[in-house]
Length: 143
Image 1 (cartoon, rainbow, N blue to C red):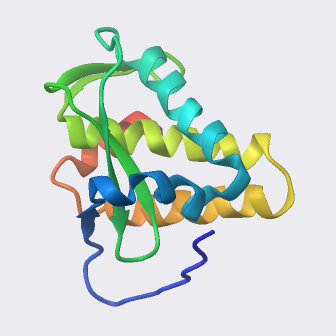
Image 2 (image 1 turned 180 degrees about the vertical axis):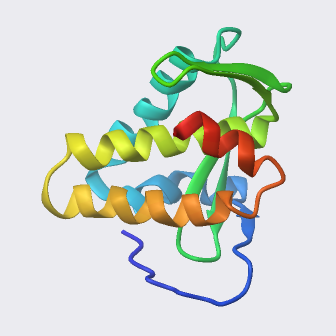
């Protein structure tokens, strides 16, 4: 699993994972719990995006050690009933948002090192989201 505790002073950047590296990417970041985390992302997408009916997801690795997934869909409405959020986000912002929910849930659902790993990945992705063009919408959605 990736345990990069980088605290770089520059902006966090995202790099698209090449197709040939996709199979290794989730286990690299989440070890034996990679399918659990991936499934959580899909569950939160179905829960929060009314028009979501499945999609191909692109994988991104972050320069601070993080990871997130982006569905290949048009901008869509995201509804989080638990906090009253209702807004339209780009595919990238949707991916960040549902991944943040999945990582948060994973940090509570898992135990020990797996929980800590989800927490680290949450913080890394959250740090990246602060620099995102739709940061205010992402923050409102996860609040």
